[in-house]
Length: 224
Image (cartoon, rainbow, N blue to C red; front, side, top):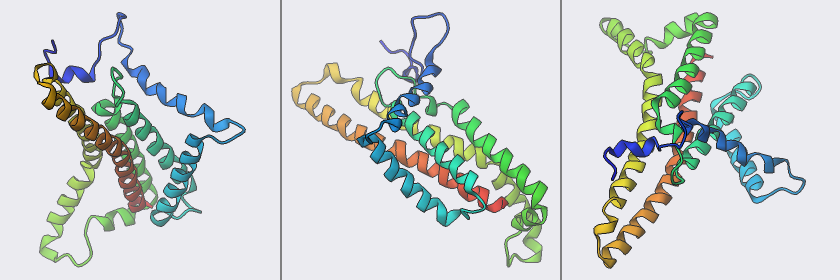
């Protein structure tokens, strides 16, 4: 019997030390077939996704100046998406649902962007604190509001990713927890609902990785 609903995010292991975080290394299983002589279907899907991301980030970033940023952000998208996808398998630790995972990514990106912006583009960063057309009386308040909104960006990025992954897993667990007490008709309805939720979670795993990466891209454009 499951005593705590959140125990689904920390599956037990047969060893004295927790091996849950090894699930983050499972993404490496998706990459060896990229080096096959004949492209596989996964390779074709990967290239289509890569082309779409490059076209999408080309609008947000100047490709010639931010070529390395684009490579880093696309790699970040793939890592988050694969971690979200692998977390949908039964009895596999969902690392992206943990704040220590998402906050470490967002905080590292935010600190690096802030250091780069304030060191290299100090005047540009000060200009962003006061939007154009702000009345003189509201300028001190706008500086305070913009500063607070800038400081909480890594927290909002981390909470958005973790909360969306937690919500879907909890909903599927709550629905399936009463499966042994249902009759045949309601059991079929529950299985159909679970199948729809799995499809929804597949889309959420891609969308949340995309949102995390696009917001990081938009934050980086403000410092450049």
